[in-house]
Image 1 (spheres, one colour):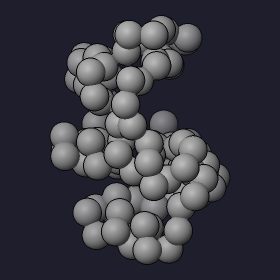
Image 2 (spheres, rainbow, N blue to C red):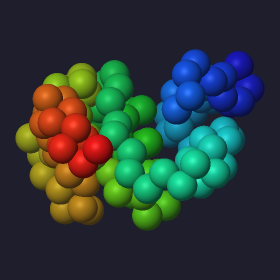
Image 3 (cartoon, rainbow, N blue to C red):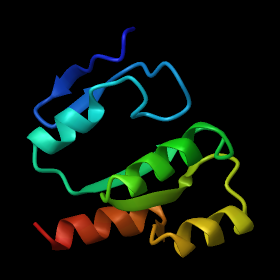
Image 4 (cartoon, rainbow, N blue to C red):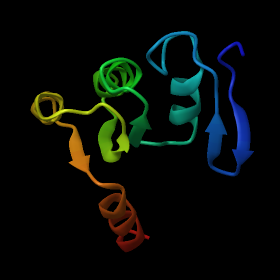
Length: 104
C-alpha cells in the first residue's frame, strides 16, 4: 500500500499508487529503468483522471507510450487527439498484441 511493487510473474508487477499518476511517490520508474523497458502500454479506468495523469508522466520521462483505447474507460475523441499530439500511439488491444507477436 506504500507504492512498492509486488511481483506477480517474471515481467509483471502490481502496485498501489497514492495519487492519479503511477509515477507519483512510487518506484515504478526505477523498476522500468532496471529492466531496460522503453515502451509502456497504458490501460485504466476513467481517462480524465488516472490514465491521463499516468500517460503524461510516461511521456515526460521519454518512454514510448501506447494507449490501448479499448482498455481505457472514458476516453473521448478530443482526448485521443491530444495524446496523438504529444506522440502517444493510439491502438486497440488486438493491434498491440499483434505487433508484439510480430516483433518476437
